[in-house]
Length: 174
Length: 182
Image (cartoon, rainbow over all chains, first blue to last red; front, top):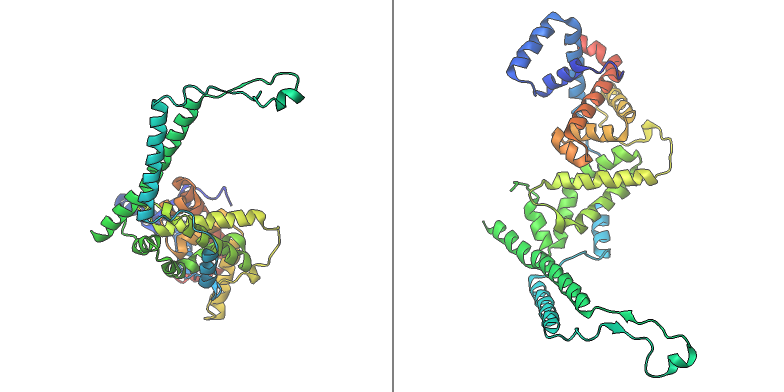
């Protein structure tokens, strides 16, 4: 059957769908006049099309909508911020970012560059004979990463909670 | 900007009028269910998958691109959900007669023809079945079918044409007499 499906089959369907150019239609109709097989095929396909178009939708159960709404109420909503809460959250994120930047600028994180686990209480040295290696920590880098994450979060909140609702409202009123 | 009639409702739902989603469900449930049924061939699985798709659509409604058509977006979710249910579904042979197709018992002859069409459609693979259903039931364009099934438009065209040709071959026996009388 696959082999039978050739260009002429596509042409029949294009003709029935009305996707041919006027010149193609004229040529196709001329071909139909001269070929009985083609005429028969077109008639068969046309009849099939009319039968297929009578296919009906199937209705689900009567409780379908109710079930969907119950499931929605039971599941937590993903991300639904009010504009007021969004702005407050945005302000919070900005304050944290500015504080972090200010602390980095003022050199608070310049000193603490390593975590020394050989503490001064003497407890560790009492039980562990070998000195433990110190872990280098770049405080400046960590705070800079936090600032970047805050900026990304800020843009996300700005988009979801402020800009999108604003443009939606404007679009609705226009 | 599209003139999608569902857009106004969607905006109101996103602004907090959650109960309005029931209107969207009512509007699209038959089509979503029919689509899921085409893929799954099982009424209870199709109902479950269609409900699941509506819940997913609600969850991701905020991310819906308003430039697109809501029905196309929704049916894509329905199609993907049904396909994932199909993967989970145990292989079971089901008689074509048990598939509910919603016919009206107009006449014996008409009913036989429709039954035969259903049988012929049932012999297609699920992607072709869905393509044929989308093409005839809601008369989606080939581009929209391509978007729903995540398939290139040219492939969809070939699929739909091939499926229509196959159906014609299957139905030749019934159609032959009627075609002669045209």
